[in-house]
Length: 523
Image (cartoon, rainbow, N blue to C red):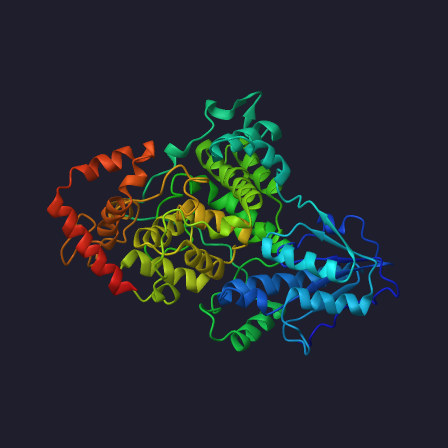
């Protein structure tokens, strides 16, 4: 396939607005394009190496962004919109967004720049610096792919001692009339989380619907070939690539999730099973975060399934809470707390991330399964992230910034506004409780209850010391011992600390010794 030129539509002789479209803003209805005039405006897009190397991005993540960007640029050209597009493998590519933007400004001499608010603090600051350098106005427009604005969240958060998802979630449901009957929530409860915690049992998942995957077309195949050459040393593989990279594909993925997996999504949303990556989850987060889907249409589709009797309330509410709740909440946390949020480390965790997080080469069955799946598909569902890979790093004492870099690197849906609070705040408790009401810590018994990973694993989740002790269980008790004085201030940790109090001195010493030995062996 021949390489696409900078634009198949001629560029205006005099440019009014250079409209910046980033790799996670792939929507024709974007606010940046609201008053676009093809006779005097130009869309600017650029693939640059720095966006794949400022963290060591996995091949699946790079491919999702670059393929979706190329498809979107081509769609704009079919609408006769002038597009100035730089490919990563173009000769003379300067390797960073600010350098490439500066080069385009020098070439096109626009009167002003327009940008929909990006999802990354670092990117926003770098583009603002370019505008200042070239003495150009940069008009920053709201990203309407959210139910709320950052300003509205800031008002909600003002003067609150604690920020909790539940209150923000209820506020948004009332405001937008979602799953409401007048002023009351449908079903008489705001939250059906207690109904959504089942495991698959001994028989495992039955008759699983297949995931919605898309065979790479010529554009995607070209991207894959380039990545395998230019990013050959990066983690992961592309032989299974099948993510939606166009609006049409994203809508198909939404449609099939609602029809085939939403009915059982809630019941099994926390369950895990060896070798089963997809289960009943939506796999829509990358399409949402690239802006190929709008959250309003996703929530509407779920509500329609409930009204039609095609999905139960617990499943629909649990799914809606992920989008209307968590997605909005973490964005508010990110933009009201940056840039200092990135440096928070409330537990003073300083250990390095084990090297096998990049290979999956570990003898702990649950971690091997989750990491191998992540590297193969760029995907793991929320419990695998929170209670397998994230929990182990938290218990081990890994520096939260290192955990953040790994999550940002390996997952196809990772954009910093959503990934950082979920990792540093929710998973690693690095913000000291700003986002989550307690550290999400558990022994290996939790993984045993929610999966089949422990069956056949050499480690026993019931044991905290000895040759067959589960590292999760050992490290769980060690975590409570190490942070006991801090955790006593948290009422939600009372039961776990009560159990810790039953451990006598020799038992504590043995756990500490074994945890220290395990930590040294992994690092």
